[in-house]
Length: 511
Image (cartoon, rainbow, N blue to C red):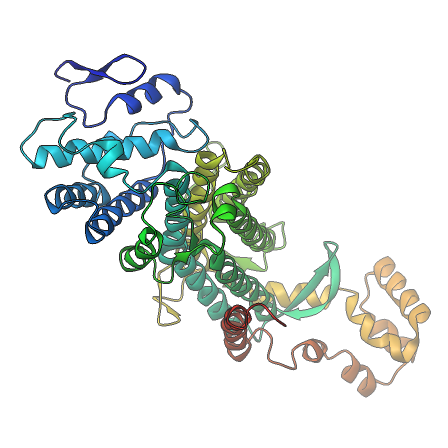
């Protein structure tokens, strides 16, 4: 710190750190909002800078901004976009609901740096000015939601979808590996009819594939951006061609396929696309929470629990109990999912509290949505690489055979000791007679097979056919559930669901 400089704005004098590029409006926001210490994520700041760079280029094309101003603005914005000035973005997330403080933070930093590139000093107010040149044809009301959409798409496309895809492949690989392992199915946490371990893993893989499809369908509305609508959607103070040109420019520098919103008043007045996307992430979290909880249950033990599978031992689980190893990766995933579900509650309220012509919960919605994308992506990567596959998945195969291991003998012993195979005898003996056999087996400890043969209720050959435990799983596996072919069809169905949504849109939404 080398002291302070004084700037004057419409309210009066402001004391600003001398070595800061940001100016009076940013400093006032810092002083007004010492709330959480949380700022917008780096991804958002970098996308916001790309919006500013695109605006400077478009305004040059339109003849509104001379190249001697436009070029240094583009250069300064691109420096921000690669993270060179991260420390200059100091405004708390909990600020004015439009995000104006962060928009002005960007405008001031970019203007100051552009003037510096022209030979001026930090904080110089000319010749390039934050509101006039850097913010030309823009408003916080269209810039901030545009940046939120683009940042969310960037996180979804580059982090979350690849992480979910890798997890799906990891689970599908285990489904194939475990396709011949018979185990006890459980409903209501009680013994049920037999199932293949691979079928359980295939079900989890399908949940992840459906999550991918849901996200792909939700992202279509994120591709609509309100840039060019300025304050309320009328486009006041923006060139008539600004919006369309901005969408073309941003499709090249951020996300292909972005386009001007169908209705700019809706796109500025509401944040329904963010509510939809957050709700989709909540659904993904619910799926992942179930998967992690199931794996945690099936691995519990190792001596006194279910222990049908063993997950990698990653760290000591207790400071007092020697040898105890906890299921840390499933527990991590469960906590992440809980956070995402909580984030969605706040995003939902954010959508509700966007009265009249502008939503005023945008910073909170941006923070929560982008955090959900980021932590779900990181959790899926870690869960797959350090629990399911225990090694990055490449070309649909784990780097090694580590990861979740099936305890075959334990699975077999539990399924053979269960009374639920009696279900297969009901068509021959009737429910009442089968229930009496179950009661006697529980009371005496004798097997179902022994009791049925002793009472001569069925012949040994007939009983053997009916109590074919593996055969009991085939009726629900006709299409190959739990094997590689089923996994492949699951992935194909996800792709077809996304394609179907695109066809619906191309047809104008008509069924």
